[in-house]
Image 1: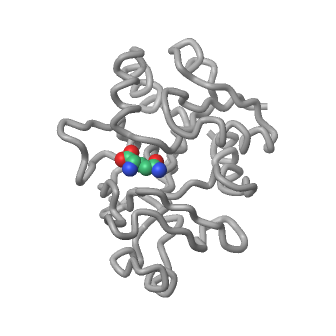
Image 2 (image 1 turned 30 degrees about the vertical axis):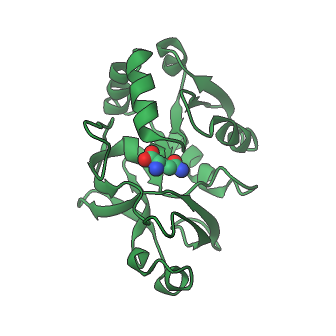
Image 3 (image 1 turned 180 degrees about the vertical axis):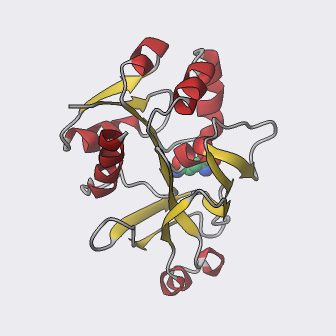
Length: 205
Ligand code: GLN
């Protein structure tokens, strides 16, 4: 069984641990380099990317995280975690940096002030039937490089119905090599299929 870590500096850590425990893996929380060293894969949760960034620096986790990601540790970021895995951010906080690894530009809080949260079906490559997408002050992928595989983009009919026309066709799930990310929160609710895709990625790594 692989050991999967959830970065536990801030955000919805418990939801990820619960979802992972429904799969055939050992799930642990990661706050220290020693815990990171035990992981075969790492989840970066939803929450606030600027806070996670600052705490990672305070806990001396930034360099160990970057180092492990560079050397091939599989990672899965949701929402704020997607921002952490992006090589470039638009509308970041002043001075905000990321861990990087996925050749993409994400727009932070992309859905806008009026519609900062919405829910709808998302069709994800590799999963039969729609996933219920929960978007909370979520980023979207504004631009993705040639190595990035798009796993999901938003349906124009759904986004129009929710009053977020600007989100039509926007990329909300991606994979590049050993890294994957979603704008939404597959850790809320009882569906573990997106985490299942990540476990497959870990097992193949
Ligand atoms: N807006 C948050 C950020 O910038 C992400 C929101 C979320 O993870 N639900 O990090």
